Image (tube, rainbow, N blue to C red; front, side, top):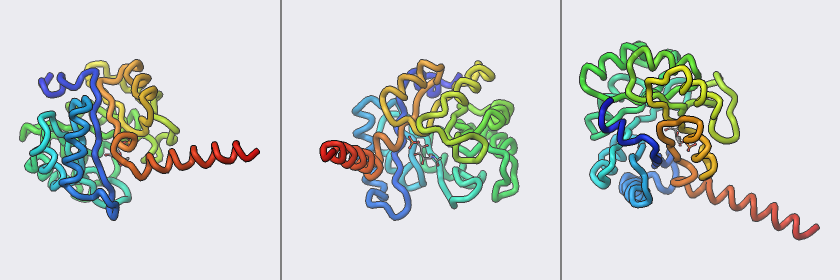
Length: 231
Ligand SMILES: CC(=O)N[C@H](C=O)[C@@H](O)[C@H](O)[C@H](O)COP(=O)(O)O
């Protein structure tokens, strides 16, 4: 196994992403957040877009998992071989790629995309939405299988927290692969549970790096508590 992948075992990975139109959508801001997360114990940073990848790579010591989101429908996480190569060239140590069987804009299959990347020495993290995707990713020889797209592709229900069931299926079916749990890990208890269920590592995004959403969670709680006080 590649030493970089081995270094992630039993560790937290923090995803630093701001979405189009959001106040923190700025590479310097993402680099600052990534550095803060590294100081908190993140063993790797996951980030989106070429400018963010370059900025984060220049700021942190830990490995960078890069992706490039384009579009909102269908395959949007690093949708083509060109996007994946660009992430790698921008400095990503690992490139995250949509591993579903859905049609890709460049007409290549996922397997063809991974074959080309592997031949160029690129480590691929397969963002899966189902056990079928994980099978495709394992057959292609991806470096990491991940539950990233569980609940976002129509193949699995969108669970409130992480999709532990899919994680367990992947861990049982592909014991020779590092399986990372990503998606809706919203509390330290969720993170502990996915690790106990056999995850190689846990990726946390929103709950660490998306203040608008976190503020909304607290706002809801404060309002609920206030309503109870009135009763
Ligand atoms: C489905 C999709 O596009 N997921 C994206 C993948 O990079 C990000 O928007 C998520 O924030 C990331 O997966 C971490 O998940 P969470 O923010 O739930 O901890």
